[in-house]
Length: 159
Image (cartoon, rainbow, N blue to C red; front, side, top):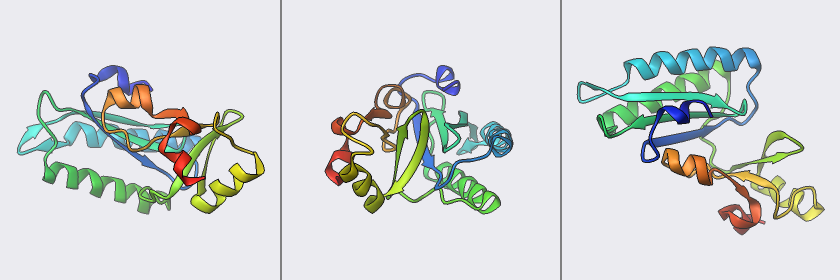
């Protein structure tokens, strides 16, 4: 979580989860593209203090320090367009909110709701399994509430 250290707790953040892990080569390429996009990202003609990176080879995370300039509808639209371009280039789905990411034996995986329920029923995952709350919307939330135990997250309502 290197980029987090560059932004204050109240900075806005967006988490996009891939339906598959990125390769190391893809991570390098995507991080370069994120850096290029962040340098050019603007809102109403004002440059945004923005950054981001691929985390856990699975998540594209973007952040903006809104103390300098807030992300507006148009600038958010441009970031969505950027994310969609990554989807097309790397043949991934970054907008499927019904995939649940979890960490097991040091590996991050994702499962559909049905698969997630089955993993829980079999005991493969349990209330102590780390899950990713991609609904966080600030850097502080990312630091403190992105990785949580399944039993303490909204994911518990899905099993």
